Length: 157
Image (cartoon, rainbow, N blue to C red; front, side, top):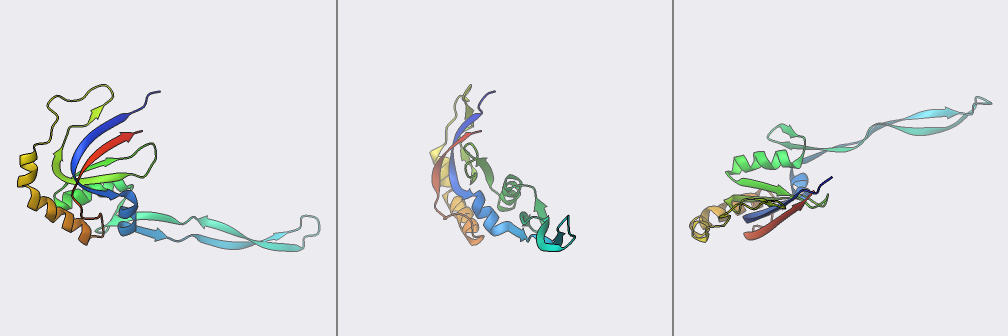
């Protein structure tokens, strides 16, 4: 059994899975009913117990469409915003998504790192207005802090 390790550097905005769930999550409440319980010897009613038919759960929904997980939702949101989305997590820790304009290094793993994996700073500077617009769109949706960052995305899973 091996460990999958990936590392990349991205220029963009970090959005947590928790934030996506906060904005796009719809809670379906628990459904339950009460059933009577009886003493097996006397047949007398002892008490009523709560029986859960359906547990409370969260469904991710955007634009009338349901999503199986935050990765699917983030990918579609990225398409709507015209952004590249890179998701990462660390052994079950909170997932994060970087929304960018594609500025970043190619992902490296423990076995290989692509040659010439670099970020062209001049391209980033030329796209600064577009990057700031992306940040504003995310903040208007209630996602992220609006702070443009250089993020070291290290994922172990």
